[in-house]
Length: 257
Image (cartoon, rainbow, N blue to C red):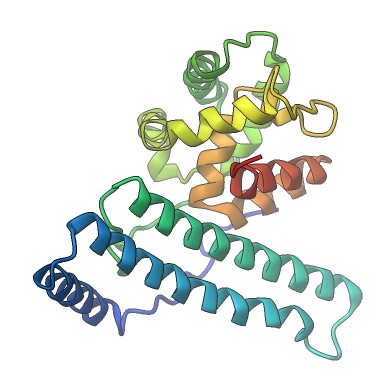
């Protein structure tokens, strides 16, 4: 895929953000005044927000059969893949909203993200690949104790995955990755504990990413730009099923066994 820096930005919905933030604060004040504990208030509001996201998910899923009637097979497959990607992302957001509330994390600030110019890059330099790989290896080994990974494969895949990091973010990406690990360390430990080296459900032949340090970067990109990652990965590798399986493990495979 040739990602152009001139690709038009998708429109943002900004009509209800301020009113929603005010309503959330008002609801929290009323619940606390009625005697609800702050943690209980956050949980109740998170469940309501997750339910709203699930409602959007139900609407999105219905789009799978609404491709234009005169479109060809290739367009239909692309349409279905896009619907599945959006539906998967919405499911992840709903789960994350409730999970953060249960963990006592600060509530999400609902509203449009700050406007930024994001410039796609055509290729990732070897120095950047080595820099990110060094950080990913350190994190991966600390979480798994595993050092028997394929470093050549890591370099090859990171040259692809890092194309999903904008030019503006490249210089500070190692720190961005470290912050992600600080926030999601428990999820990462659970992922590798179940599906990584020595885990009860490991299957390296079907999903080798669980045994590779670049999977740290893949997880971070799946949480930030899942559709961009999927498009670049599928265009530049012949391992579509590997990313698909890994995505399911990261998003849906971390509950009770």
